[in-house]
Image (cartoon, rainbow, N blue to C red; front, side, top):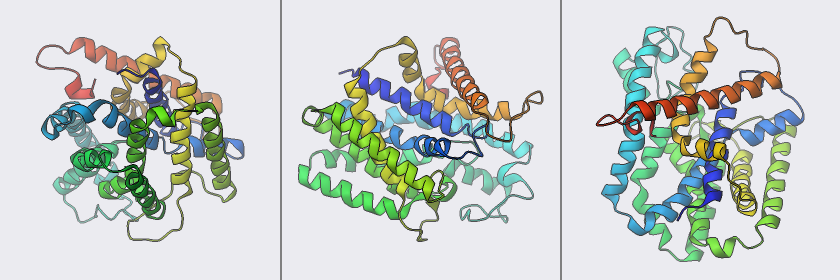
Length: 350
């Protein structure tokens, strides 16, 4: 069953992700309320994972077959990732950037080494997605899909057991933190799994949970904003990250994003709307995810643009609009151009 509210949620999630990847265009040296907003925008991946968990139960559970499930993910996610990565890595090598550079910064990057050959570095890029902004998500997502039998089993557990699992896994994530530079897919799998399970749980008990959505959204979103402000008062902007076996205290961002993910769900269930633009962004959301790092990289290297070094909110907002629009138009164009045996979903997931 199609749910407009969930469709809208997907659009909001991809917009947040693109906005959080565009900070260098006028949204870097911020202070006050702008920094609080950055704490809310940063980590939008949690929204994406939450909605993916919701859709796993809502769409796939009743007809779940592991082989068919993985076949679909292979076609729409893994194949595009391999194709686009195979284009990106040679470009990074040719311009001697990233870990192909002679002066590459290996500080705290435990997976890459200055002693690696170019071939080894390329393999490590495939395994981590580190060569392009946001591509770390795919190796993590592949692991998430591979363990889908666990998610299927989770749905069939008692409600009490489900709550215990979500709670315990959340505690682990709070102390685990995100992987430094998003480099470790296994650490990211453990970290984001509670969001996925929370999405499954809310879909499973949708009718009961959706009572008093308006009040729930107000409470949860207010808590999220308070936590974002608390992060700012503690001098912390953005996600918490560390290597897997380090200790670095409590990840406030995880807690904030859990409240935000669920609060946003209730908000969009309260105010269900439909616009052609929102539907289009949602329909092309995964293609936007794959394409927007290329657009951002291109904009960064345009010689006729002088990007602001200080805070410039209009420049930032225009850049976000341009990146989302161009990514969406490229997705639509490729979808129209590629037909027959070569389909756009094998390249951009749409």
